[in-house]
Image (cartoon, rainbow, N blue to C red):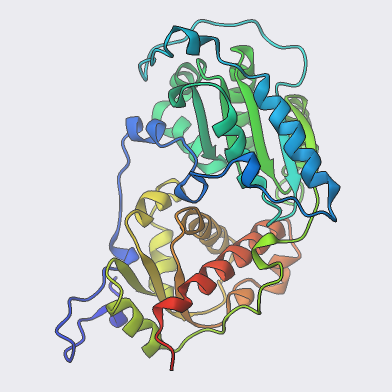
Length: 366
């Protein structure tokens, strides 16, 4: 389906912007592995660039703890030139650990957990091909693309695996990830993860977590939790979020911004249902801005969760979002914001609001 707002403007003579709803990327397995690095927004972050809130001592404590964790991950392979393993070659097995093999950054949205996780990846003394950084969705998709055994073989030679936005939304993921991480820990892979939920509480409010308590407790055993308190830095001391624009303003901005996309919000939501969330990042590649007309509350939880993933991928790639319709804080119903996925929805609102603020430069001042 093609948005009617994306039709060529007969008065401009300018080619119409592309639509996100027309993009259906296919990502080869080799590319999935190669892209397990921090996203563009976090290319340059380091522990030194993290600014702890002086009123939240847990933030400075987290920097100190993670710096020490990184220092303990010196890579023996770096001494022999860090020879790259082939994608499908198994690494030698190292002794299993008897203590927690990783750190788990727990805290609310907007306290800088992803910044710290990416800083850990950068600070770890290992070649890029021996450390991986990806979201929970990207990790589960890698298993789907390669198969379980091949994923273990591919990642088992890594020094560090960083998992951002660690959440268990269904029982299948619980068993899969529990098994995968146990295998990797057995090969000596260090783990680091971020989440809005303590490891022992994963799945709570989403499915019958009590029925999968053994797997959840097994996951928790791999991590030492590190609590990070604080308010959302994305809006700390900033003015109120910008109000939505008109359809005309959004359309004109899209036509005037090379590399922007333009979609009707309903068309985009329908398209997200046809594309696996693991491909949303590839769908956003190369965009300079996303323009959306007719934004309205999402109709159901499945749609809402897909939108959360898209918001994360746009935020990672620093793609501004200009929209008409309802403001982003009205996307999710009161019931959704009180349910088991509420932290995901608040994170999406926070990130979309930040991107909307970035998009202000796309509309000329009156």
